[in-house]
Image (cartoon, rainbow, N blue to C red; front, side):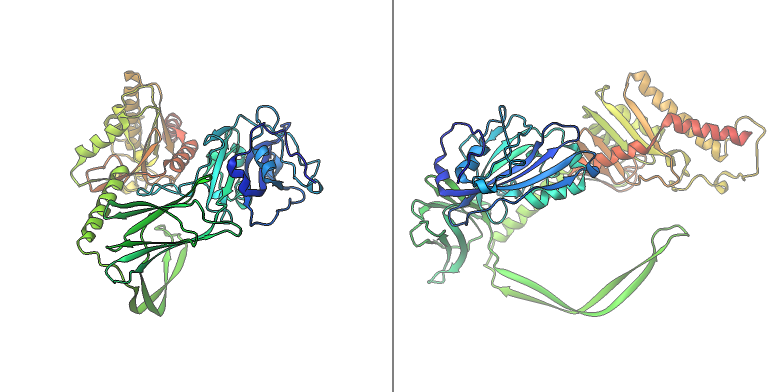
Length: 576
């Protein structure tokens, strides 16, 4: 017996829906602590092709507590609906009444779990309903961020999808819980931490209802003077290949050398001749009702496999200290030496002739373009002025925030770099460390030593001001110089410049970073020496986690005012 699943919107069934009989709905909801109704976290509606057996609903719920239940729970339920019931539920009006799906078979309905109202925001269609889209994993030439629809799963691929995007707000407690992330990943095959756009959303998955498998390979033609591009299409049980069109795309030495459309015959065999070796081939398969049902970007075929086989000769164990401190613990590791390496090649590569130069040049340009996108810049020793200009230019472009993280950032760097800001309302944060004030002049990470200052612990001065050559006097001089440099920013009218000092004996920051708005550069040297010696600067490809860690480190720092006060208090104690 069939039952109505929801109050569905009164829309006609799409023409493509006739290719499916059943569907599986996988739904995860978030019941936040103190809320009155569960909220949609993410859900999928997977239509099943006619050769698939009827699915069954799973009894009960699976749950995941967030922070032991303090931030609520996640609930997962898998229900089986007829294809039309599932589509109607998917198209329910989120602004009036949206409920959890109700199984189409009455015997599988759980009144406590099914038909329960959900708290939902407005859902935005993509693409326009009832159109479907075939996910494209990456730009054909430039690479990309990976599979845009990992939730499809291998059992439904290839598939077209439709998406209803809801609000992704107020899921922070879920994103901060590793167990919750894993709970969703295991059940819906998606990492919501990486695919945050799908938070609060639904997707409909419509697998290819016609083709079961596609085989694509190359073969030497009968004349031996060219190659054949071969396709073999196998339909699903009860389906035919009638009406299918194959569009073949070939690339050769940066040229689109073939774009050819041909009907797929009833036997599913398509053979296309090529006078030259095929370098990269792709295809698109279309159906008059379902549209694009399969595609592959132009890719090269594997012609040869190189194997390097070596024989393990002996195992060497190496023991070394973990760090440079005299109390460092030892650690050991093993190296397996190999000898008698043999390189074997399997297969026969197509002759490349002069075309190889095209690929080599293209690869070189690609590397250079990628380097430019990362701001890769090498400064030779003696290029101090160029390095100063590079950093100042980036700082000057700041619109929201500028963060300079350098454990040796001192007074001179305020004048050399921070004043390069053009918008004085930008938030500026300098993260330095005690080493900027306490380290020896030669850049040693240790505090100024007695040997360097010519003093001893027992010596004392009757003067209120320590001798000019003493350790503390040098530290106090640097502190006063830093304070004077900060005051130049105040006099200029820069209101949002702050300084944090990592005051621990071993400050956690070693590398140097420059963050401007959402971009982060990795600096190969401290700003006080950048360009004096050979240095490399790179823009960090993924700045978000680096910014998060920098902000976390800022949270552990003390203000320059507090650090200075503690040093002065220490000096007063020494006088006493």
